[in-house]
Image (tube, rainbow, N blue to C red; front, side):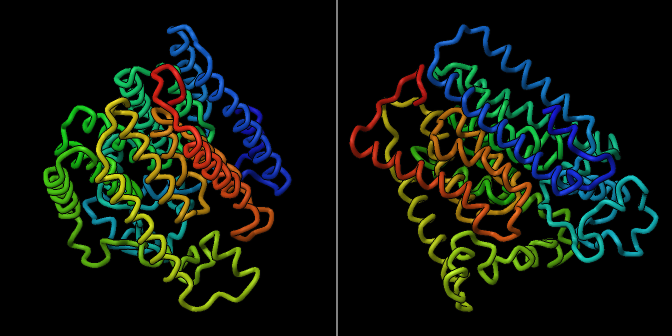
Length: 429
């Protein structure tokens, strides 16, 4: 961790020189390998009960090491602080781009110059994230303060995981799958991504569902969805073996309630989201890993992205229906089944969207802690490679992440067909 931090040139908005960036990603790749060894060890070895405190102490130390550093792998946090200060001034954050003259009086030398897309993009963050930014903005207007708030969310997620592991009869030291995950550390402790809030809310929703609080689980999951839209894909896991209407109605109500304070912005309440897909190449298909690879062989037809999107939607819908309607297994603890289903849905949806920003994958470490599978564990950390792309395209380098993930899925599928595994409370389940 300290070695990777030392590679950053002070004042540089990324690591620094191309050579430093390559070395940096190499160091991160080594940390992922070391983490995978630790994960394998904790899943296969009987450790004393006191080991969990060592795991937590090391996790805290790593976070404290990264907290004081200015974010240098992403500048998103500057928008969080800005949105919080805009709301503190009584202004709807969806109404103006940061560079609009109407907000000139709010500009400061520490935050405003570092906001990305400041001159053309309205904020992209949904209402639950905005409420969080506003709350933090009432306490502090600094980047370090916002990072500290994200680490509080991260700590809440760890606390929820410890409870879920205990309820499942699993070793609590397995929390290192999340707490030591290099991608989680760099995404939350270094860059302070708002995904930490979404992860904390998802962890709370999992706990509520395990305790059969279906309506509350629906409310919290809806709030997580309005931090980062991706969590909505795990909803079918929450419906399996439970009530349908209560969580759906409760979730829909909270979504409406959270959007209500911002509706004065009209259609602009969606912010930069409609244009984001085009900027990322999703409209042409070049933003999708499979289509980017296909484009090396043949020119993509104009409707390739729509066909891909339809195929993914149908596949995810079929998977969601299968998970939501299957009976709960009697021999597997409820938290394990819930997290396994959530992990499958989350990993499939994230991999299908295949964003090229590393932090989008960090949330997969949450369900993988309670219900680990090799492919999900891999996808929760390996995208640290996305911090640099020496080929500057969307297929070859990302293939180092997606090809092994597909191989792990195939291997697990073949093993499941030949010899299905029973649940073991002290094992990897």
